[in-house]
Image 1 (tube, rainbow, N blue to C red):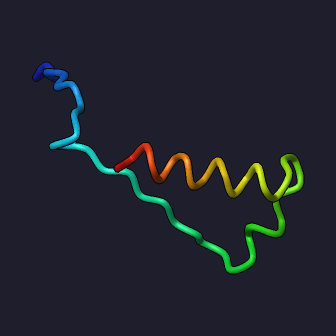
Image 2 (image 1 turned 90 degrees about the vertical axis):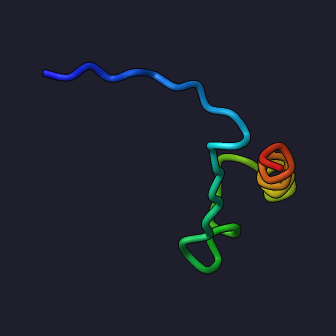
Length: 49
Protein backbone atom coordinates (compact mmCIF):
# COMPACT_ATOMS: atom_id res chain seq x y z
CA UNK A 1 0.00 0.00 0.00
CA UNK A 2 1.42 3.37 -0.99
CA UNK A 3 1.05 6.54 1.01
CA UNK A 4 -0.24 9.76 -0.45
CA UNK A 5 1.90 12.87 -0.01
CA UNK A 6 -0.22 16.01 0.33
CA UNK A 7 0.96 18.97 -1.74
CA UNK A 8 -0.45 22.35 -0.83
CA UNK A 9 -2.27 24.16 -3.64
CA UNK A 10 -0.98 27.46 -4.90
CA UNK A 11 -1.73 29.73 -7.84
CA UNK A 12 0.73 27.83 -10.04
CA UNK A 13 -0.92 24.42 -9.64
CA UNK A 14 -4.61 25.20 -9.18
CA UNK A 15 -7.54 26.25 -11.34
CA UNK A 16 -11.06 27.54 -10.81
CA UNK A 17 -13.63 26.63 -13.42
CA UNK A 18 -16.94 28.48 -13.56
CA UNK A 19 -19.46 26.71 -15.78
CA UNK A 20 -22.95 27.90 -16.63
CA UNK A 21 -24.23 24.41 -17.31
CA UNK A 22 -27.77 25.52 -18.10
CA UNK A 23 -28.91 28.50 -20.13
CA UNK A 24 -31.05 30.69 -17.93
CA UNK A 25 -29.83 29.23 -14.65
CA UNK A 26 -29.25 32.75 -13.40
CA UNK A 27 -33.00 33.42 -13.43
CA UNK A 28 -33.81 30.14 -11.62
CA UNK A 29 -31.91 30.90 -8.42
CA UNK A 30 -34.56 31.52 -5.76
CA UNK A 31 -32.74 31.48 -2.41
CA UNK A 32 -30.72 34.64 -3.10
CA UNK A 33 -31.56 37.82 -5.00
CA UNK A 34 -30.44 38.10 -8.61
CA UNK A 35 -28.15 41.06 -7.92
CA UNK A 36 -26.52 39.30 -4.94
CA UNK A 37 -26.09 36.10 -6.97
CA UNK A 38 -24.44 38.00 -9.82
CA UNK A 39 -22.16 39.87 -7.41
CA UNK A 40 -21.16 36.59 -5.72
CA UNK A 41 -20.28 34.99 -9.07
CA UNK A 42 -18.29 38.04 -10.14
CA UNK A 43 -16.49 38.14 -6.77
CA UNK A 44 -15.56 34.46 -7.09
CA UNK A 45 -14.23 35.03 -10.61
CA UNK A 46 -12.25 38.05 -9.44
CA UNK A 47 -10.79 36.15 -6.49
CA UNK A 48 -9.77 33.35 -8.84
CA UNK A 49 -7.60 35.73 -10.84
